[in-house]
Length: 64
Image (cartoon, rainbow, N blue to C red):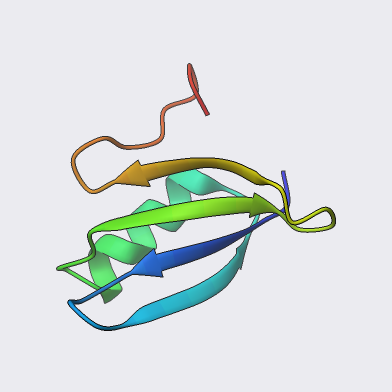
C-alpha cells in the first residue's frame, strides 16, 4: 500500500510522509514525535482519504 499520511504532531504542527507500511510508520512516529496525536492517510494517486488513526486507536492488520 502506498499512501500519503498527514500527522498532527503538536498543537500547531503537521507533517506529511509517503508511507508503505502503516505499522512501521507508527513505530517511527513513536520514536520521532512522542506527542503525536493522529494521522489521516490518503491514496497517493487519487488523494482519496482512506482512513485515520490516533495514538490510542492504532493500525492493525485486521482493519487497516
